[in-house]
Image 1: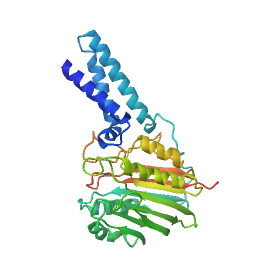
Image 2: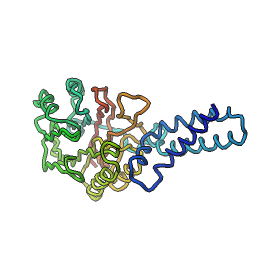
Image 3: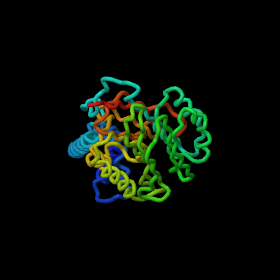
Image 4: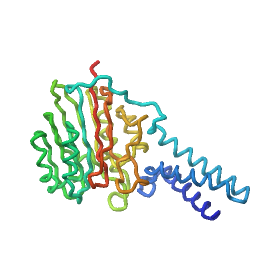
Length: 321
């Protein structure tokens, strides 16, 4: 048992240190994701260390696991209810000043479109962005077309298809491959009923992984490119999608710092949307960021639609100064 505690402690120390290396390889960057899980494991190891018989080894294990736990908790602390909220709760909400957005990575081989359509019917979002949607999904979502007359279709069979459905009119629509070919993003203005124009960016960069990009460079470049684009803008802005990055990663923190956009989850919770099938292996991959023009009415993780991601429903309220 003591040998197992030592081995696990060394392992947790290794995966904690790997993201500190100056490398964008997925083997290093992937350990930015499970900080909650690493903290839970090291807390258990910390308790188990008190049962080690050798006083010297016990001290080393207690200190090591204690420091790892503290280090990991510092990263995730802003996404707990103990931290001050960054985005105020909406004090007023009118249909002319609020926007409800549903973001859903559907998992392309998943054909449970009726589950997503049911969620749409129940919650009536103003805007829906679907990710990993191909021609099959484009056809399957036709039942909602009457309610969402403004659409952008970008079906692909490479897991990076994207569709946008809106009750509001769209203006200056662009479909851009920002960094990689066949990895599109949608950029447009939403025209609300009171003629308020909101700039929106819908993203789904490729993740660092052994089966896709072995390095995080394309994802990081795409996120920081959008951050720099919106940094000097004074217009109401929303960025949402499956960013294939966790909320507390250095890249996402740099995105918020450069862009000046706010994260409504800070002080409210993690809203882990991935992986839907494994409760212990979940982290926040689906995001919504917005400019200071908005307060938050609600943010919710939706029930499963048989994808590996849960949909994310957010309602923002535009606050006139």
